[in-house]
Length: 400
Image 1 (cartoon, rainbow, N blue to C red):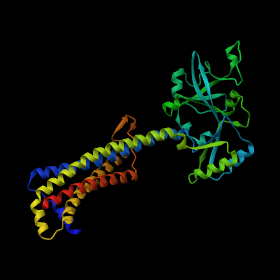
Image 2: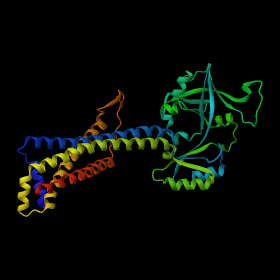
Image 3: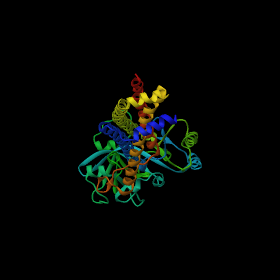
Image 4: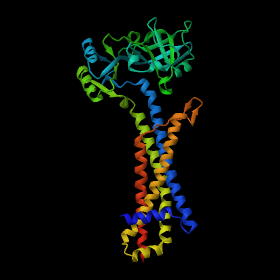
């Protein structure tokens, strides 16, 4: 094995008498370099975009969320609440109420979802850090915090006591009811907007936050009725174990989802995009490795007399084949590793010095992940192995 490897290194690093062969070899090496470089850059960029996209949901979605498997409300007794607090893996939990409502401000109306939250909500989620105007909810008066999108649609600001925001929800009932006054069909409350939050376009156009008791009063819910319970777990806690304990306390009719399951559609979309981009750039890399095949075949033709000499001196056909196989692997490995190293340096510079900006205040998000390094190395060496093996097989014809 040392003999073929030694000859392969001599062929690769020794300048050929033919300039055409030298140029073809350089082009092949540059192709491998560019393929490894671009593949790692793209994977790191998509890793950054994935974390950037999910960071918005991390501000809104809890580690675990328990809600009724059927219906809109779950009944939780004081004894059950006390047991939930005693679960080892639970750091904090918050009781919430969610329902579709109609917002009315001056002459404008818009549908939305009201979300009543208790005093622990800010310890479970980080939504209050997203308040861009005004303040989070206080206990001084009925208040709401609305999304930036809703504030633009309704043209509403904060702490406007002259024009209060109306929140309307249909009254529960059975069958058709004839109303002489349409307003009698709705529970209506007036409230002041204390703050405006901004997370992402979808959430900003959807949710209005308010106090839990205010939401209960608006929706005519009982003291022990809630839409869901959201949990923040301790860092060392097991999601599966805590989920089982919650289910034992609240009953089998309760559905429990993790943050990833709450964002299942977003995760599937991001994973699909990442896979498609990887396949596209792998195809580009495959095309680039055709240059390696061509370079080795041309080298075999150029070294035809040397091959016959080596064969006469006792080299077997497999040893001669291994010479050009190792040459292809060395070319692929060196080009890939150098390309990967340059890409790693560039990603580190982007993470520390913001070389590329999306907006004047927002750098392009990238993420350095060890799995991306292994993906590039495995892809490069697998494709290089196939290309080198195919090209090296041509060496046997040079013996004829």
